[in-house]
Length: 166
Image (cartoon, rainbow, N blue to C red; front, side, top):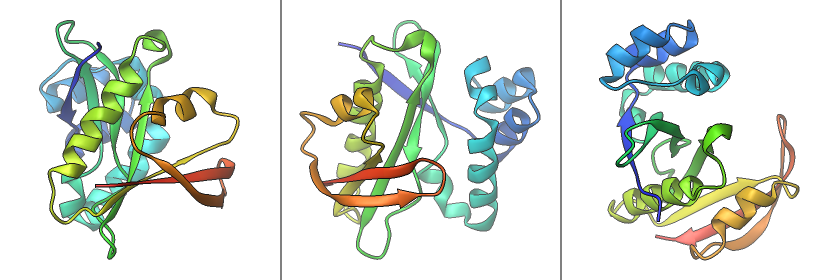
């Protein structure tokens, strides 16, 4: 079974990723990062602005996923932010295409769920996935999520919404 650990990405690491400076990002993170993380600059812009506006959100977002044993970055994971007023957090994760179909998506999700379950402020975990994203839908299977509805996302279009009690 694949296992990962998270490396938190500080504002300095995020800035370097946004600038495409992998060496500086790796130094700031304290771990060698990957070109895949550089390619996700659009996301790091959002997360960097979020952390600057709400520093407490840094504990919930923007983490590199490192394969235990191999010590290579295989993707990233976190939440969209801290728990909302109802105690709900939404998972966000992605696996580098080079490392897909090896169980890392499930490993990232397991660690995110462990993090959410450990926080008494969290009542539920939410996931929103496009209906044509079979891999992400399969990743959720077996983790206690049930379909709760649909939503329209400006970037992704129609998404199915799933909830899991913490």
